Image 1 (cartoon, rainbow, N blue to C red):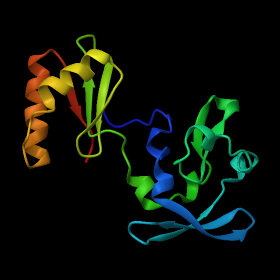
Image 2 (image 1 turned 45 degrees about the horizontal axis):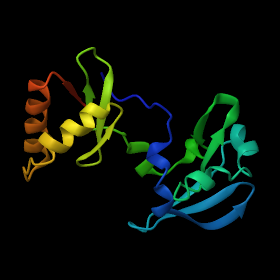
Image 3 (image 1 turned 135 degrees about the vertical axis):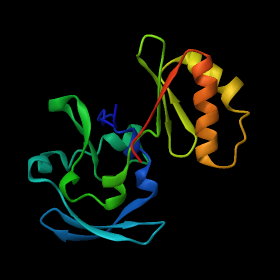
Image 4 (image 1 turned 90 degrees about the horizontal axis):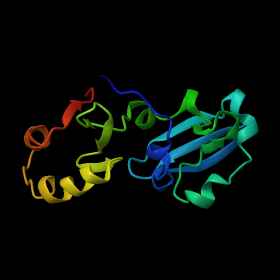
Length: 163
C-alpha cells in the first residue's frame, strides 16, 4: 500500500505557522513565504476554487491553518485552493511514514513526521504510550524497526510509506 491522501486537511491545519502571504499581486496571485526556510513561492488560486477564497470560516476552528486551506461544502471536505501552484514542501508531504493496521486490516493509526502518532483506535493510543513511548533509539531507521517489532508482537501490521 502506498501513500494515498484522505483529504482530511490535517496536514495543513498548522501550516499557517510556516506559510504566510508576503504579497498580494492581484487577480488571486500571491507570494507565499516559508517562515523557516525563507523560500518564496508565487501561488495562484485555482480557477475552480476562486469561489471558496472569501470564506475564511475554517480559521475559526483551525486558527493556525495554511492561509489557502478552505472548507469545500460542495464536496464535504477541506481543500487547498492553490493546489496547482502549491509550494514544494506541500507537494512532497506525505501524512504518514508508518501506517498501522489492526488485526482486521483496518487503519488504527499513522506515524507522522518523525515519531508522532495519530491514532484512530484508542487502544492503540494506550498501547503506544505504554510500549512505544519508552523506545529511545537514536536513528529513525532503528526506531522504526523496534516499533514494527513491538506492534507486530501485539497483532498490528505496519506499512512503511514511500520515502
